[in-house]
Structures are given as structure tokens and as C-alpha cells.
Length: 106
Image 1 (cartoon, rainbow, N blue to C red):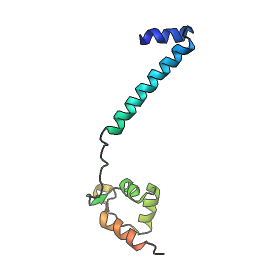
Image 2: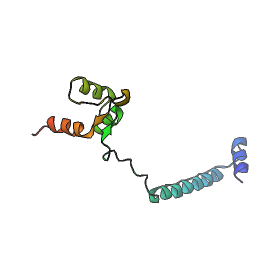
Image 3: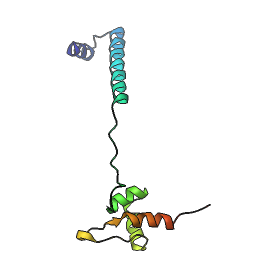
Image 4: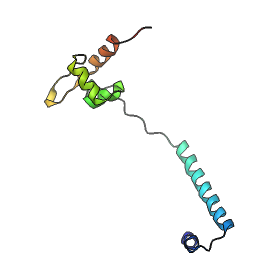
């Protein structure tokens, strides 16, 4: 039936009431899909808080800054990474210390 309706539309033979009926069915289907999505369990976010070391990218995500900003913080000695396996690994303690030291109390 779907292919028949599609061919009617393509041929320009479908009347306006038929098109409205088709739109109504599409809306009903979208509503049922939306309800299913609302009731499905959400995918849990990956927790980074149980990690001891962070990559530059993960540090940027934790601080809500760009990767370039993390490299600038490293250059300014505000973050002290380890060079394990030729990549920077930033300890969680250093990130927490940085946030504590740069905290603004108004």
C-alpha cells in the first residue's frame, strides 16, 4: 500500500484529502516513536571521575576548554603532566589543584 501511495503522489494523482490522511499517519507514527524514546533508558555517561590520569583531550573536556588551552596551561606550568609513553598524562590531583588555586571568591 505504501508503494501505491508513493506512486500516486509521484504521478500527481493523489487528492488533497489523501495527502492529509497520509500526513496524519506519519505524524501518529512519529508520536509513537517519540514516546518510545522518552521511555527508553538513557545511555549512561562515561564517568571520568574514577580515573587517575587524563589525556590532554580528556582534561580539556573536564575543564570545558579547548585542547590548545590545555597545552597553554602546561606551557605556563599551571598543569604538570607526566610524559608516559610519549604522550601527556595529567593526574587528577593536578587538575583539582589547578582549579583550587585559580578559584575566585567574590
